[in-house]
Every structure is written in C-alpha cells, then in structure tokens.
Image 1 (cartoon, rainbow, N blue to C red):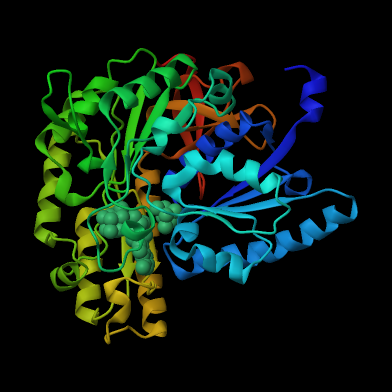
Image 2: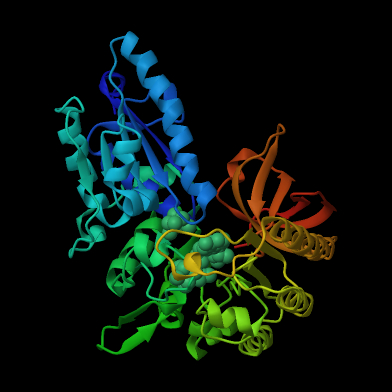
Length: 461
Ligand code: SAH
Ligand code: SF4
Ligand code: F3S
C-alpha cells in the first residue's frame, strides 16, 4: 500500500472482552472492515470507528461496557471539537442480549450487532457513516445464513501481522443450556462449520506462517461434520485431518464439555504428536447435587473416569478447568466436594468464579441464592488451592527440556516470549529472527507468572 493511500484511511479501534471466540471474531471483523478502508489502530483517540466486542457471561463483564461507553462519549466530544466524527458500535454477547436497550442507555451508540450477524457489519458501518446517528442500526436476529460464508477470507498479510499462533472458530452457539449460563441465548443454537471450510482456513493460516492453531467453540468437542465419503465425523477426525497440513505443528482446542469426549478424540490425544498435551475441561462443581441442578448432565465419577482415560492416553497431559462457587443451593458439603475433586484431579491451571445470576437463565430465579460473604470465602479458599497446584506444576518443569513457539518480543532487550506445550508463557534470550519458530529450551528458573528458559536448539520442529 502506498503511503498516500495509507494516510487517507479511516481507523478502527476494537476493544475485545470475554472469551477467545470474541478474540477470533474481532480479527474477522477487523479484516472485513479493512476491506472497507478501515485500518486497525491500538490508539482509541485516533479512531473514526470504535467497536466494543462485548461479553455477557457475568454481571461485571456486562456492566464494563457501559462504563467504557461513558469514557468513549468524552472522547467523541473531544474529537468533535476538532471537527472529527467518531462512530460507535457495540458487538458481541451484550449486543445480542440487550439489543436496542443499549442505545436507550447509551444514545451515543450508532450501531449494535450480534455475534451471528458480523457479515452485516460493513453494511451497518456504511449506513452509519451516512446517517449522522439519527436512527438506530441494530442487527441481532439469528440469521439463517452462515456468517462465515459471507465474511471475506483474511489476506495472507492480515494473518502474518497477527503472528504464529491463531484461533479458528469451528463451531458457534451452544445447545447445552446449563442453568447458570447465557451463551445459548447470546450465541444461539449450536452450529458446526463444515469440514472443508475449516480445512481451507487452516491451510490458509499455515501458508501464511501460522504454526499453531487453536480450534474454538463453546462446546468444541461436540463439533460434527461429514467427510468426503459422507460419513459422520467428530472433532477427533477433524484433528487427524488438520494434522496432515504442512506447517501446522501444534493443534489445540477449547472449550470442551465432559460429555463429548469420545473415543476418536481420545485416540487423537494418544496418536497425534502435534496435538498439544493440554486439556481445558470445565467441571464447574465437584458436587453431584450441584452438577445436577446446573444441568451439566454428568456426575463427579464420570469426570474422574474421563480424566483417567485421558491420562492413560497421554500421560503428560496437563489439565485445566472452570469452577463456579456459590451456585444456588451450594452447601458447605457441596463446596467441600469441589475442593476434594480439585485435590484428586490436580490441575496445571484453572479459572474460578463467583456465581453471578444472569437475566433469563433458570438459576437466576432460584430462591436458594448463596450469601455474598460465603461466596467470597469459598472463592478465596478454592483459588488458594488452585494457585498452589499451578505453582507445583510449574516447579516440576525446572531443568526440563521443552519446545517453545516463540510468539512475541519480551519486555527486556533480546528477550522473546513463547508458549510451552502446556500453555505456560516462557521467556528466553533469543535473536529476533526466531520469532514464529519452534525452538527447544531448558527451563532454568520459575517466575510467578512465567517460566524462564535457555535456548538449546534453534529448530525443534
Ligand atoms: N462452554 C464452556 C464455558 C463457557 S463460559 C463450558 O461449558 O464449560 C466460561 C466459564 O464462565 C464457565 O465455564 C463458567 O465457569 C463461567 N460462568 C458461566 N456463567 C457463569 C455465571 N452465571 N456466573 C459465574 N460464572 C459463570
Ligand atoms: Fe454455557 Fe453450558 Fe453451553 Fe458451556 S455448555 S456455553 S456453560 S450452556
Ligand atoms: Fe462472553 Fe459471549 Fe464468550 S458471553 S464468554 S463473549 S460467548
């Protein structure tokens, strides 16, 4: 692109909240807007279009949007004084859940677009550009067409700019309806992208220098499709297919549900060297009673069995999970069951949250809400145990050799940061030209948030 063209470009600033699916969507929206003359900027002050890609999962996440919109209003006013217009859009799960309500609470918002309507974003922006904000532009229907069929494919240049590790959404929505969760309402029904669409996108990523792909879906292991012989296949088969692509040296997937860990997927963990030995398998609670009221549809023993099978298939597998404390009706004994489950499984990392009642979900109406102080105490106790387990896992890595995908520059001169197979960030002194390569390191020190490694081999794969 010539410098002249570059100067004429409009700029878009996108702020992303929530899960990796939003991170992926942000890239797709940025790419689509790129085709409309918008270049991404990391400086909100210079943006002609500010887009918030929002999350509705807990009350805190959701409310952040409105405080951010307050700040953006000031920015808009500042820019107006310089004769510049700023368009403001809200995308993501809050957009879907609250729709027109957003424009009522924050009239400065020019457009609202739900997660299944991103192929309509460029049209909305074009209309907003011509409208000066006098009318509402909202797309929150669950459209019948597949957004991915209508969004432009990213260019190799766009992919390269994002580095060697990429996300790829293979499935949208969720049909599980856990009693606490908004996702089935904000993302709609569970839909799997077809095999050839996924393979094509993964090939494009690999051809553009991507070495690691993380497949995404809220129930990623419920992905299903048909192969070239019209045979029904699941995530395990898909992984075997993707493993054949030249240059894709690392595969991951997230988030999986315990009920969908089938034999082929377990075989993939056993047989595929490129499938990283890490499994994020949320359990939420260790109490059968709570699991039942959460509508998770499995018991703690089912979960233990899956963990055993996984560890047998891939002995070096690291486990991660999500937990909710203070779900309605959770007694001391139920919470103790969760602590017991954590002690028995032992996790390499985990996320834990206080239950947050969400509008429209069954659990929000329960009369058995848990007191806030109890929620706080339980969260602290659980997090203490999980942090201890994470630290022990990291300590065990001392003096071990491992492969590292070097993803970005570190804070110190000459330092690069990469991820281990177990998703740990590792800092290493290494020349810049190794960015995007997989190297071999020996772990020489353990920090509080990352590990430190020494380069032993510049090419591990
Ligand atoms: N699809 C994934 C989880 C998606 S949401 C699964 O089934 O596990 C990510 C995490 O947010 C959940 O695992 C859960 O731990 C947490 N979460 C979801 N709804 C919540 C709520 N209402 N209150 C607190 N935490 C919640
Ligand atoms: Fe939410 Fe449950 Fe679906 Fe996960 S499986 S997205 S927790 S409803
Ligand atoms: Fe949040 Fe929506 Fe993801 S609610 S966690 S951004 S699917």
